[in-house]
Amino acid sequence: MRAAKAAGSSRKTPRAKLFRIKVISLGDQAVGKSCLIKRYCEEKFVQKYVPTIGIDYGVKPYKLGDYEVRVNLWDLAGAPDYAEVRNEFYKDTQGCILVYDVTNRACFEALEGWLKEAQDHGAENMVIVVAATKADNLSRKVTEKEGRDWASQQGFPFFEVSSANGHAVRTLFATLFARMLATIPGIPKDLSALAVQMANTVREQEDML
Ligand SMILES: Nc1nc2c(ncn2[C@@H]2O[C@H](COP(=O)(O)OP(=O)(O)O)[C@@H](O)[C@H]2O)c(=O)[nH]1
Ligand SMILES: [Mg+2]
Image (cartoon, rainbow, N blue to C red):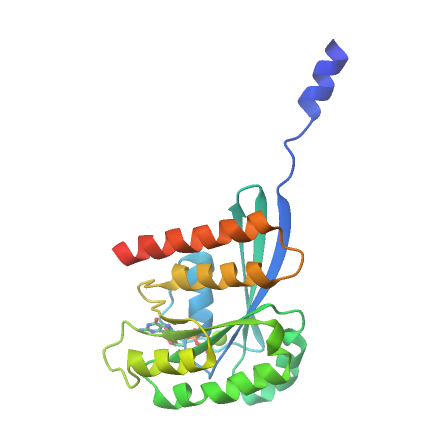
């Protein structure tokens, strides 16, 4: 009796089944890649620009039903001299955020080049979304329609976001993760269904703000 009780009390609740997914961000320097990751992972925003040297990294675990999904986010330095570092970090990547800043036309035009680089590194295996950052800033040089049209020509979801006030950041990530979990081999069907549900809930919550 006592033995059975001891055995029972030492039994831990079963661990959530863990899945790791990897996301990278691509885009010109200073478009707001690190801030987007920081906003999502830490719910923080820093005004001061600290250029990424090589790599910036964020991790965000979240629970979906009986599963835990651990997202590893890599902000790859935009400077061309970091090409070697970027090559290494394309490996095993299942998701990619193409980032431009709505206040800077050149970085919007640079998206083609970034997409080409991603394609050269196996983008056919990646889920890609487009993030138009700094939507809070009034000195805009790229209209929402231009961004949306470009993304839809490529077949990518599009989000205007602000890391400064958090606008649409959670929706972007939840949508990206739902798409990734629907395509990564070996992901259980119920987990991908939960991710879609979560993306819909987050979108509804953010739409109401
Ligand atoms: N107003 C505004 N500024 C932003 C936003 N996101 C980033 N920034 C600013 O843009 C600069 C570059 O951001 P950072 O994330 O380091 O760019 P990265 O080089 O692409 O990683 C920083 O000074 C940020 O404070 C945003 O959503 N709104
Ligand atoms: Mg950075």
